[in-house]
Length: 110
Image 1 (tube, rainbow, N blue to C red):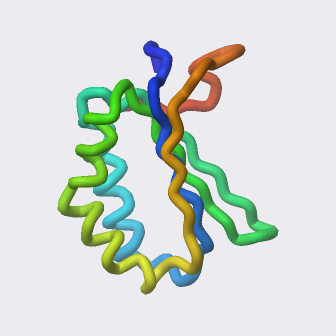
Image 2: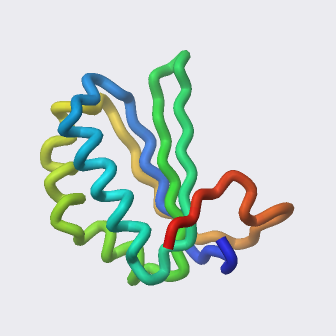
């Protein structure tokens, strides 16, 4: 990530049965998100103890984030989320500042 993000979107969810279809759709969303102008990077976390998983995307502006939300594949995943996920939470945040190494742990594939 070379630019300080203005926004982050965090998707936190309980995992249930993550089928091959889930992984295919999830991978397509991630691949297409990385191609959106304004995408800056991503992180993912999984807690084996709780079964919670988190995916964080960083954005230069809200228009870029809206492109992700409006993506056809994203709408399909949201409609089918009950097949693969338990409870979930989405957090959209405005980034005020970043300290330390801004690229630590981030994957960025333009």
